[in-house]
Amino acid sequence: MALLSAVVLSATASIENPSFESDWENWADTDPSAISGVAYAGSKSAKLSGSGAKMEQQVAVSSSTNYRLSAYVDGAGILGAIVAGGTHQVQTNSGAWKKLEVEFNSGNAQSVTVFGAYNGAEGRFDSFALENLGGGSSSGGSSSSSSGSSSGGGGSCTGNSNLAIVSANDDGSNDGHGPGNTIDGSLADESRWSSSGVKWITLDLGALRTVKGVNIAWYKGDQRSSFFSIDTSLNNSNWTTVFASGQSSGNNADFESYDVTDTTARYVRITGSGNSANAWNSILEVDVVGCGGSGSGSSSSSSSGGSSGNSSSSGGDLNPSLPPSSNFDLGDWYLSVPSDNDGSGTADSIKEDELNSGYQNSSYFYTAPDGGMVFRCPIAGYKTSTNTSYTRTELREMLRRGDTSIGTQGVNKNNWVFGSAPASARDAAGGVDGVLRATLAVNHVTTTGDSSQVGRVIVGQIHANDDEPLRLYYRKLPGNSKGSVYVAHEPKGGSDTWYDMIGSRSSSASNPADGIALNEKFSYEIKVVGHTLTVTISRAGKADVTQMVNMSNSGYDTSDQYHYFKAGVYNQNNTGSGSDYVQATFYALENSHTGYAD
Image (tube, rainbow, N blue to C red):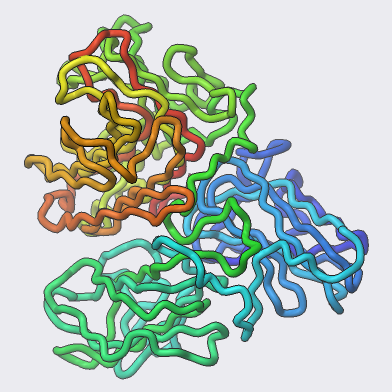
């Protein structure tokens, strides 16, 4: 994650070229960043698609004056201001265009640096503004972190999720496998950090967070034990040991989780002292687990880390008068609907270009009164193939983004592969590993039909060539006021393994005490890194629920296996009344992959 700096240039705090209609004029940009044709206002925005992306500009301000910085963000991002060495910021991790605001007092400063930041996934920024609120002391209506300061910690937060990591650094003595490899989302052997002796790697979280744990995937983790300790710091200078005399298991090629002493920190340092075979310290990937922002004034639209931390609607930023593609970036999706307008005998497919040209259908796919994207699917309808048992109104990921010279199927630029796949497959694919995030509410489920099928709907998937590594279900039984959430993992050519996350998938389940009611918003994150599949369910005011699946023996890391995400409603009932239906409204949808930039 990289800081995206804007420094305002006029005494009246006017940001030049605030909507990027003149491309990068008045901004100094650093890749991977680009001008995007998807905009909140006008025709352009700035897109941040990976670690290191940033842009800068400068503004003169009046001293001892209150200011409000705002910008619209589509996807993930951090917005903030650096004032006399202190940082005031707010963040978001998902959602269609939403307005972020952060307030600060200029103090003795004559200029400030306002910034946005890559926040673990792709994001677009548009319509920057800096408003003069007048003189006086700081209103404190923002989150802030200042180097060396412990103010504004996240100690009261609840729940756990993977925190965004701004950067990774070491002392420069690595063997060419640098520290940035540990936060690139890949578990490939060549994507590692390696340094010999007693050596450290420092992770910058970008702001104060409550750190609760660290997940580490060790190089050759199933062949040797690594020796290490973990420390945290507020200022990258004074350190507190939170995990001492650590030793990895020596029998695990995937992530191992280490529960550390809960602390408020911006920096996390892992110090290695060799392994059971030699003096090398080698790490494939790191996740820092925790929660919270860096102050009580953090934005209600922010969420921590890589998973969607809150389930509040983006509805204030969604326009109910526009078709779904005007509220959501659907450029890398096509839509299946259970009609047959082309006379093929199978469900219609709305390809990328048509979908993004304002397509909507009042029966199956349209914009809700609150601006959400509605997916509706009855039991009766056309199916996508003769081998499919159920109807669907569902998006299928298409990384080719309308380039029909690229085929739909195969290990190619339209699909992605696991980070554990051979190098030839990773090079040929459109992306490596993946994250799908969504915020939604299930509005209706079927109430008729066989008891084994009633009330079921799939709202998210990972699909492979012929199998389904992940299906995410919501199910509410008649008579129950709340629904359950569970997942299925299907190994290549094998049988499903089921995992209950909230409540039970049983056809006779009692009302789940902690279940999700119809029309209740929640968020999910589906994440694949190498062999590890992680599904997280997030709700406002409740701890996240997480399920991890080890896919080492699932058969998907071969050179011919490809994958794509799916989202929407996949009706899992074919026995009820034909007019009975499932429906869900999505308020945020975001997909990302290592090496993929639309």
